[in-house]
Each structure stands twice: as C-alpha cells, then as structure tokens.
Image (cartoon, rainbow, N blue to C red):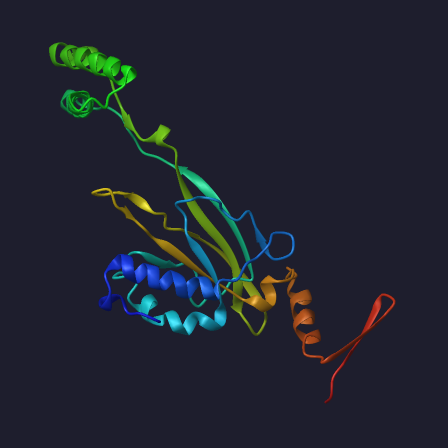
Length: 243
C-alpha cells in the first residue's frame, strides 16, 4: 500500500488511498462487459481493481476490523461477472410506550423551538411547533388515547448489494455466485460525513467476455484458449499451437 493507516489521520489516509485506487480502477460498460446495473448513488463509493493487485491489499484484509472505512467485497474471489441491486432498509417498532412518545415529541419540539429562537424557522415549521406543543400536552394528559409506532420507513435508506460470480475451482472452471452488502457514507457527526469506500476485484480476462454456464462449455472454452493460432474460415475456426 502507498500509505499505512497508522501514519495518517483517517481523512488524509482515505484521500491518499483514493489517488492510488483511481489509478488502478478498471472502467466496465454494461453490454460490452459482464457487468449490469452499476449503482448511481452519491453516497456509494467503489472501485474495480484487477486481480493481480490483490496482494497489495493483504494488510487491509488481515486488519479488516481495524479498517472500518474500507470494505473489500471479494478479496481472493475475483469476479468474472458483476451485478448490483438495492434494498429499502428500515425498522418498525410497534407498541410504543407513552414515555417514548413524549420523548420523541419533546425532542422535535426542542429542535423547532431552537430554530424559532434563532429566526431560522419558516412558517411551516412554526405551525408544526404549535401542533407539536398541542400533541405533547394531549399525550401527557391522556396517554391511554394514543397508539404509536416508530419507523424510519419514509427516510428511504437504500442498502446496496454487489452480486459477483467467480471461479470456485479454477481447474474445472466451476463457478459460484455470492452477494455482499456495500458500505455507504454514514451520517454527519459534528458536520462531518464519515466516508467509506468499497473495493471490488475483477478477473480482467473473463469479465470482458461472456462466460458459458455449462461445465462442458467452460472446459472447451479453457482448452481452446491454450491454442496460440486461430484461423477462421466461414463459420469454422482452426485452433493451432505447437506441441
């Protein structure tokens, strides 16, 4: 690695790592290469690196728990095909106690009140402050009249996954498909975003072209690749090599 994490603060270390990753990043195009639906999300940062660079990242792999800002999606399993999908991740807590209801209302009231004192609240927020005040009084007076739940459903947090296929057994060209979740930049703490990035290793030889699914075709594909001369005539190709 060009830098060691212990030598630099997190932000500087990540910036130095990005420069290194951008220099090695391989651009893939759906339709031309074995990749589909590349994610477009400003909070998701990922890099595609050729498999011959994996050895360089062994220190990060062995210190995975310590390096919380970097995730190597498929270390030692270079992808021959890639696809991405997202899930709407949310939680839903039912049967909320009156104390939890009032705590949530009080927190929102304090937030709106602080904005109004600093003259940052708009008309809509001032109206919400009044309604929150009224609700808080009603819940405190008659808690038995209310039923509630807590959820971040409408926050609509998208949780990204990377699905990759790799050679589980290079000799027989048997493949396996796995999915792994990807890290996103997390929320602000003291006006600072905790940035995280993902590294995905690829097999450049196979991700650039379709890989047959049947074992017979995989073996034939591997065998024909050993011939140094290929002479095509009509629909037939002569594969030739020196013995």
